[in-house]
Length: 373
Ligand code: SF4
Ligand code: SF4
Ligand code: SF4
Image 1 (cartoon, rainbow, N blue to C red):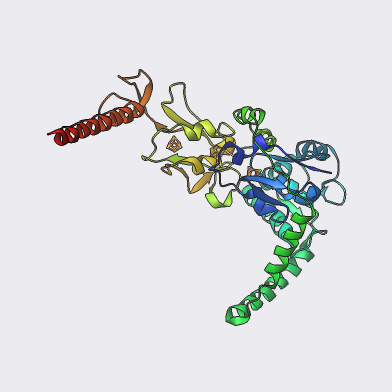
Image 2: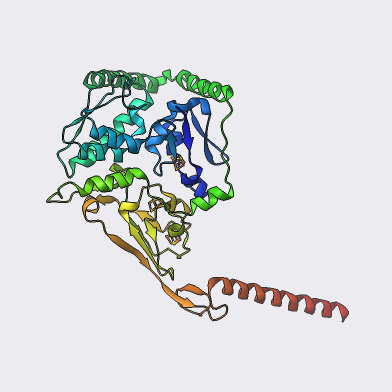
């Protein structure tokens, strides 16, 4: 099974200002940034499956396994166990959205088989964190939960944590060792040497594709699943940091209507009208890729500190900012009017430059005349 990367779906390809490193953080031994874009060695293949479930825009996929297909075939089957031993290459290919949707769509409870994972591995922690998040979000509007068969593993992990805490206290007292770090770095260097990293480059076709707005399948699945369940009587509000895959936002007064965020948003969660006189936001289309935040120079677009579960059931499009659009007296183009002269910023800059050049020319002329005298 091989790993595929769709460069046009990666937000790093959309803008050099993107700071997304979710795939690299999920699989630091296999994925790294090369020329600011994710890159991996072909040989790493399925070991890098964690990046599939973590990428907000579904830029990664596998040659012989589709998470969307799995969602439907799993629900069609009678088995209610998700296990790397027989129906998934790795549980980490499933995102939090997949896990929530599976729990909601299945009448019987689903168990995730964690028995083949090393409880001390990063992968175990990542999958565990996704299951925890899915169960936490589920608990705010449903009594469905995902189970794991790793009760024993959890006990072992807790024992290890107590032991680690003891060790870290000892380290704090002066016994710090870089052994683990060195080992990790060595294995990474060896992997890189073993096979050259595959470099991805932007070409015309990719750039054309980037411009298309695209909602990942996992979000479409979540939408569909939510439509088929009962609305809760009370809508809870969760802390922003407890929900990794969707967000609510606001725009403050420092926004200059530079148009970048809503033009660049990969899913169309941010949008405007034909005159660019407002910023609309549809939180259920947001995949929390953070690109809009990364490109906003004045840092005007902000995450709300909470997420309202109501959005899952009564999706609303909110207007985050409104602007007065006027026609420029000089060039005739529309611009965001903030008061004063009816000239667009570009014409004002040109005017300033013209005044500067004219003043300079006069000063030089005066100097030359002084010399001649
Ligand atoms: S968008 Fe996906 S592929 Fe691109 S950097 Fe983020 S996680 Fe990696
Ligand atoms: S929120 Fe930021 S990126 Fe978006 S239009 Fe305003 S200034 Fe530009
Ligand atoms: S609104 Fe921002 S965080 Fe959400 S999908 Fe669009 S660019 Fe990404």
